Image (cartoon, rainbow, N blue to C red; front, side):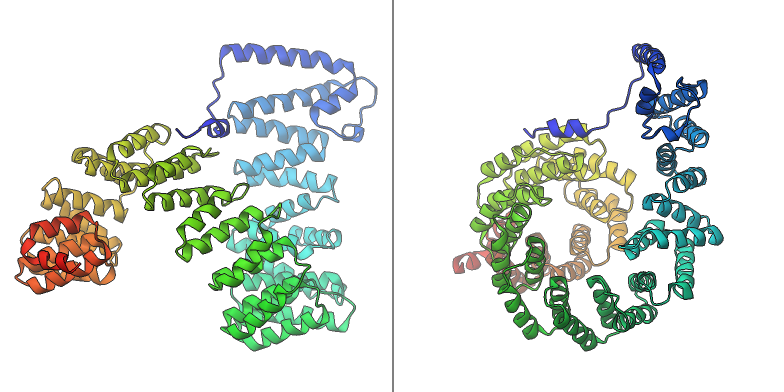
Length: 609
């Protein structure tokens, strides 16, 4: 059984605000109010204050105003726990205005943003940014809110402040702000103001100018506006050659990317090669050049560069991983393995490298080696996918019990991970024809994941195998209540009605809607072909089944096509379809059924095999 301990710990269960809890809260609050008189230091600690200047009390005694503020803060946190954000937010805003404390203002701002109140967030963000002028996050937050308000005047003043405060990674901060806006008018205003600042003589020939032009180049690169982006990248590239300003590697990469986007591939490659000559130690430029050469289909030159990089001994683990992944994506498996194997004992990237080693063995059809590598993946974002894939490969080797045991030992941390494991187990049961076990597994999973479409769909497929056709119909129809335009479910329900429930007329609307939603899906074409066959319209059936078979060599489609061909007295064609399909799928139940049904056609073929 899947261990749900970690899953349960991460679940946010509804809070029941009982009378007992209210009494307990009252007692705690009473004790806190009594403790207030122990001194101002306790007050600052409880309220989250870090400096006496936050309130600047006149005397050593805590004033009634301070007590009131503390009570409001405590009440706000209680209201949050009771899922009453409006009251909590009102309290935090009131205290932020009363105290002008940047910490309280920060909390109020983030609460306002969390609950979608941008208008209220502006006031507290202004306090936050004013009282903590050195805090980049505060200035960025307020600037973003003003941009969303389309307030160009105040936004410009805070942008100037940001430029004067943030020196090292100004372009990163500005780019991050742009991405978070997610509002086209605000983003356009942002670009306009940045362009205005980039032309300001105050910043000419300074690092600030470089950052502004770099940000604009990156923004236009995101929007695929190569010409506009290049105008700015050319400025900072020229600025670096005429001054002692040193461009960061990402600036060179942005310039090269814009050249590439302008279809000036060779110019981009030459530019990077020149930069590498000036600074041979900058590995990120070599990595991007490698990627660029591959994108330009200059594979021989890329292979030479990769060979030279492989000779270097000072690669970081992250650089090694990046290069290995590029080689893997290019299907240079031998070279990719060389780099991944360097990392297998690496503390940080070792598990990731093992996952990609498994992928290579998997793609090279070496299941035993792939399983071994997949099982070694532990502390990695790929951990779950690795073990799910290992289980699937084990099941394909008729090691279903070992595969199920592997899945049973996994400990999901979220409901989504739990669902992935359940669906994989269900597929293993389906492949192993253990339909009852799969059905029961999914029925239990629906307790934790009620109305989940994927779980319902999987249970419907298991139900069909158990001849629980009404249950399957109900599951598919339940899905369509929430997703009426889900082509796979429409198709599954339509085919069920045609083949199992013998209701072809009921099936037709579902199948027609499915093919309209997904006109190139061979499975839906197959279902439509089978519908027409059951309605004794063999010519129309043949049309749909031939079209489906041309797109997919699926065993079931081949079985349906052969039946229709035989019904149309095209026995030679039917024989050829069955023979070809059996050579690929010798154990397919649908083909074996056709073989038994039309022995006169298929027996010579069985002898050939």
